[in-house]
Length: 294
Image (cartoon, rainbow, N blue to C red):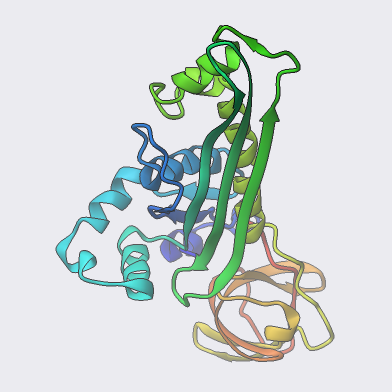
């Protein structure tokens, strides 16, 4: 996570809050192949950003800023993890999100003669898989999210003499409607998209903000202090991660904040002092991880 150290040192501990997690959403891989005018590799992440902006504890990098950085020559030459890390460093993102659009659209099934007596059913599908949430500095995979929703509309009556139904008109309108426009969300498929993206943005937020609590055993203390660096009795087995912000306590009162910068072992990590009202000393207890805004 990013922290403005000068501001933290100037502010009293009681008034300090942990900043929001800054997230960059990259273009998605489009395997859906929608036949209309939509560009799902860009339209899907743009829409996801709109949903993530509503979530507490997150600050989303502007889509235009991400596009500008990806267009830079030195970034375009990179591939894989190197490209992701270079982007994250450029936009100062704490985490990046990238994924795959597997299915996205409406499939029509027809039986009989559509000009006389026939039957049609419509299957709406949104399937976005392998949405990876990565910690930008370490490249650690925090979570892999996915969403898959289907909705089938099957009229009970037969279609007589090719007379179009509401479903027929909506099916044709999908090829012309502006993606994520107000009219888009009035259509049956748009309503399914709304449910899917609400679900997906919630999964991503939980991965970044609502992580499992740290295990606070008797070892959860300050082990050593070397200037602004501290060694902590918390590690992998205690569910500590890079970027976690922990309070340092004296008689249950918060006297300082430290941020984990390196996880060294099962019950050992290294961090830096972000702010202190009193000097951080060996043996002081560590408190539960703080959430953004807390």
